[in-house]
Image (cartoon, rainbow, N blue to C red; front, side, top):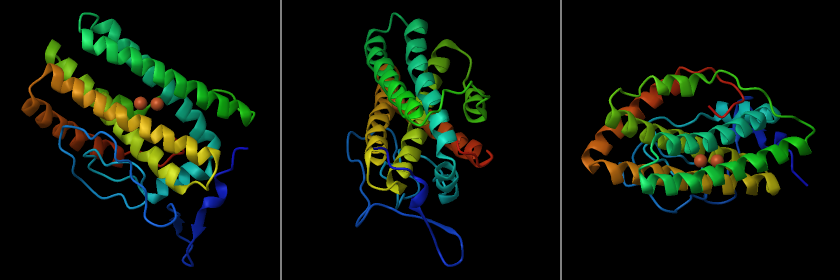
Length: 239
Ligand SMILES: [Fe+2]
Ligand SMILES: [Fe+2]
């Protein structure tokens, strides 16, 4: 049985939401770490690593997502489908880059599995997939992609990794806030999977570009991501 998420936001006497973390010390994923700079705020109730993200997702976002979990889940499903499509688009744009093609084949398959699972959760709740909506976050990030064959390739790799990092961070917060049960375990697993994808894109960037160039550009794009996220309205969506 899937446990509903609505009970997990406790109220302080002030009425402000308090997100409940896991019992005892918060768990943190300690799998493979990215090679680029890892810094930024600590995430006390997050089950995911920070990956250099400049801003931490607010408790208000977690409350918003859990408060309309059906909408959040519908958006999550669409994000998984797009992640699989992104991996396939790397293959079609760069068919001659052997390592990239091999890694993106695996990624496309894993994201498709995530998509299948999220659609399963939707259907179990008698929901159906929604239509694509304008994604302000993704569209704003895309504007940061530079022209020029190599610059374009590097920026696409790094932005894909940053998008994975933000998804990982937020799924980690959802996992931490949910009551024990199947849904919590699902989000824990998704968080671990997405963390691997962050590392994968950074590793690929350093496969094709010098480490110093990767780190410099990664820092610039992380700065922009933090600014873009802060300007977005609070909605029950992944971004
Ligand atoms: Fe995924
Ligand atoms: Fe992913």
